[in-house]
Image (cartoon, rainbow, N blue to C red):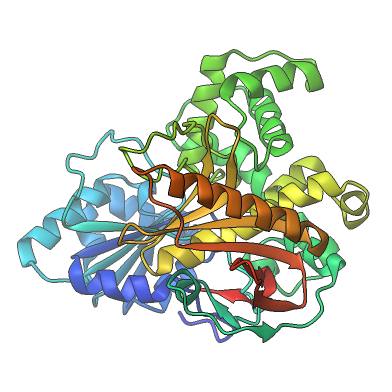
Length: 425
């Protein structure tokens, strides 16, 4: 099965690399982000466990004898393997038996519990996280600036063209779902809404067979949407539900539901960054709240182009979420890791890219060009603080990722400015 309209994905190089090293690769991520089609392009045979044909014949066959579904030309794709958890051990056993590399590609849109799985698959099955499309993958970024080169100090200034605010809003509402990339904004907005309905009404129960309070799950999702791109604690989420929706939910239930959302890849939080274990800077250990795609936030808040234009604060947070989704995709392609930074002195950095060699780069994200001067000043002050701390490592690069600027350039103070619509991995 090959799709002539398939749009290449950044993760493909990693898939090829991992197939040369491991016996099997498991590609995990939210539903509808493109895992199956990308896997088709790297496999020579496939079985779709979730295929309803023949009254779910493939699933029944896998349940009867997992070994049978492994037979086929390699690499063999086993799509949505978590529907029949024993497949995992069957794949691990087959890899052990033959010792061959690149035998299987597994996909999963939900992390199952470990019931029925005997072995972790460590050393045999490697995992890769796939996300919705970045602007570069969807063709909405020119790719004139490479994040990897920028983080290494290699940079060529370029005129990147005018950016339309309404187009940025469309990118947020539409999201990075391959199935809606070419749809008008009004139609594209339907997909994330239906995505959330499908997850809550079906996938939440299927993940472990436990019935949960759907109403409270939806309330928590709305609270997460209102707290997108913030470091809201579980207690804050609980209080937000009570104050805004006039409902109550206990903290333990909040914790349980957040775990479910993470296992279903609805959320994709940013972990906190520390510049060094010996640093005297005390870092807050709070995650920054993110959905896997900003379009999910819009669906929950019923955001429209008109309402976002009338609420620039919310638009700014959603733009931050869009940029951090893309930065994460780009950074992971070259071994980098994306974090956020916040310490007890009130200093914050929107995004931090840590490189494999331990160097790190600081990024502020601003929608408007009128915010660039203040953002640059903040980055420079933070760098000076780290330089004054003999045990801390200062950032190697300072950069502002901007929405409404028509050029990628380096300021006289050394801070780079790059439009999100010019960035690639």
